[in-house]
Length: 324
Ligand SMILES: Nc1ncnc2c1ncn2[C@@H]1O[C@H](COP(=O)(O)OP(=O)(O)OP(=O)(O)O)[C@@H](O)[C@H]1O
Ligand SMILES: [Mg+2]
Image (cartoon, rainbow, N blue to C red; front, side, top):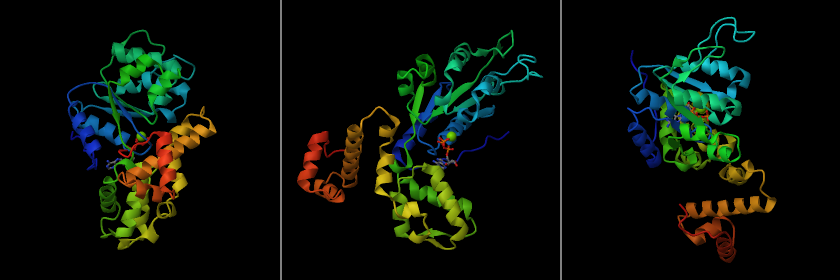
C-alpha cells in the first residue's frame, strides 16, 4: 500500500520551522496538540504528521468532536458489547480500536465532554480500553493527535477541561499561525488552487487584485482562500482583476478587520466596555505601527490621528515602536 502524500504549501518561516520540528517527531509516539483558527490547516497538518510517521502504513482515524452528540461519543470512541444498552444489538468496535497501531485525530478536543475526560485519560495512560458493557481490557497502541481552535489552558483554568488530560495531550503543542500572519503564502496558495481548479486555463492575477488578496484579513484562512479561488476560476477566463474579487475582499471593512484582530475581547465576556475599547484601540495602534514598519508619522497618518494624540496613546498603552 502506498502512503498518500499531503500537499502542504508554505514559504513562511514559522510554518517551515513547525514542519521541521514535526519531522523530528517522526519516529516517536508523542501526543501532538494543534492549535489554530478555523481553516489554518490543522487537519492537513495532522495528516502530514501521520503520513510522515513510522505509522504511515497503519490506520489513520479522524473524528470531529463537535459534530458528534455527547451520548454517542463514548461508544463511538471506545465501542460497546452486544446488549450493553437497549440499542446495542451487536458488538461494536470503537474508533480507538480501529486506529490500533496507527494514529487517531481528535478534532475540536475543546468540545470533549468533561464527564468522559477521565475515561479518555485512563485509556491514554494505561494503553488499554474496556468497551461499554465489557469485562476484559483490550490493549491499544495509538498515537494521539488533537486539535483545538481555542486555548485549552483557559478552559483548564475555568474548570472546563481536566488539567491532567491537558498535560497528557499537550506534549508537543503546535500553534499554526493564521493566514494574515503569513501573507507571503497567499500568492503561493492562489497559484496552487488556480492550477487545481482551472488546470486547462492560464489564469493570471492583476497586481492590484493580488495586492487586495494579500491585504485581506482572511478570517476563514486557507479554506476561505481556497473557496474564493475555486469560485473565481469558474467565471474568469484570463485574468483576475479587482472587480472579479468578492466584495468583502475588494472593500475590506476596517472595523471588521479590527474585530477579527481582537477576538479575545469578545471571547472574554467579563470585560467592561472601557476595557474592550482600550483593547481595540491598542491593537489598532500596534497594527498601524507594524504596517508602517515602526515609523510613527506614517502610523499616525494611517489612523487619521495627529502625531501628538498618537504619542499620548503610545504612552497610555505603553506601546513601543518595535512591535513585531
Ligand atoms: N498549507 C496549506 N497548503 C495547501 N492547502 C492547505 C494548507 N493549509 C490548509 N489547506 C487547505 O485548506 C482547507 C482547510 O484546512 P483544514 O481543514 O486542515 O483546516 P482546519 O484548521 O482543520 O479547520 P477547522 O478548524 O475549521 O476544522 C483544506 O482544504 C486544506 O487542504
Ligand atoms: Mg479541521
